[in-house]
Image 1 (cartoon, rainbow, N blue to C red):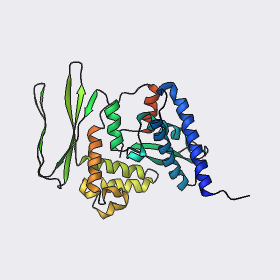
Image 2 (tube, helix red, strand yellow):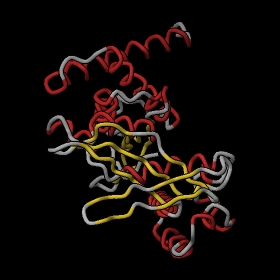
Image 3 (tube, rainbow, N blue to C red):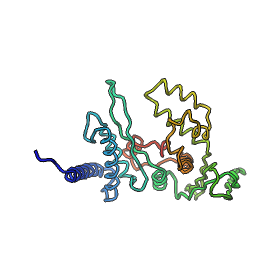
Image 4 (cartoon, one colour):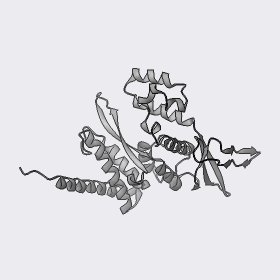
Length: 287
């Protein structure tokens, strides 16, 4: 049998993926409306990322006995509906091992919007959201006052930057919202230390199948501050590298923006979109 060239294999895979996306798009039109080319591109890019991850495990997206194909379909629909593109750093994909009733494991796909994608979703579908203003990055040494209240009147927070290089201590995301009688600005604030909770949750999740080790590590980090978590050698192997490398402060800023906005509700177009979104994306767990 003649050997199939790498180029031929690549073209065949692209054709298969295009056909897969088209079939999903066709079934999607009943509740989404006709899909456009950009939505198809978003779906294709997510499927491509899924296949890269599965290939590393020696799997394909069509391996129904080893891969949860429904989770793949939902991830693609999610990216298509919200028009989230992996090429724009708006979304990425992870694989999880999920235990089945017979004790075996199956690979499940989950979409994780990055903060650009999360803010894009909120700007388009956030409950009562009119506009999301640029975030305030408050650093050590800056002048900052929290909002105060005088009866039902809200006096906004104030911020006077003094440096562009100090340690980030909080993020404020001003969001213009509508009411029945007008609009107001909702100042969403997240403090630096809140990121410690994110890291502890990620560590716990990464050790979910190692109960003894998980219990030991969680006891160790229980009272650790953020700075202790990202500097203590005893927990270095459990903390994501993005928190300890040269992009450390950027990652902390990203998490603070997400923490500040994660409680802004989403208005779903219909029940199907709600189900796909909730099965694919937990807006309390974005990166």
